[in-house]
Image (cartoon, rainbow, N blue to C red; front, side, top):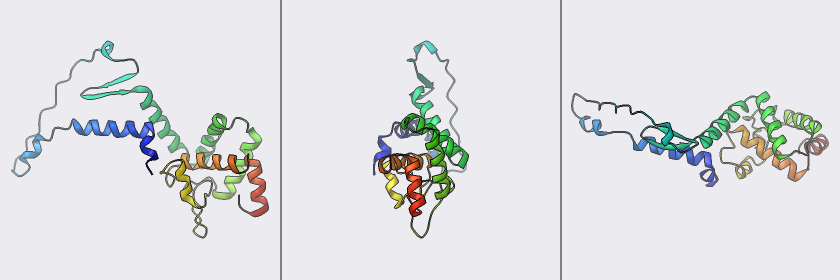
Length: 188
């Protein structure tokens, strides 16, 4: 249940959000009951000495510094999720994940995966079978078992792809073996 709290991207986002909230000046809210509200002046801009920063850290003014590498990873993951929301983008993300995590799978395996998930969901992360309860690109059944990857399985196509690749690898060894099973029994 708390897996997403352990992810560095989530922790950075929460810390960043909390640090921004902590810097908000709410003194003007004391006058909320009066007719006239005076907003505080903006703080004066101070010059930033780039030599005073640790390498890889960004100075965000009054907000504590943030590791630029972590922020870049968060940005990359967000772009990957947005890309995977289209069938063509999902196929591209799957190919990238295969190259990194399943290097033994060749281009014929990627072709089998394309056929397999095209038959299952047309690579639509919102696909849902109301009869069986299968959901997402890999049509996981029951759908909530994708939560072993992340709790955002309903809305995150990358989570669905990661789970589907892991399932295929552990159950069948390869996408082509899973596709053969699908042809025999109309499911995998």
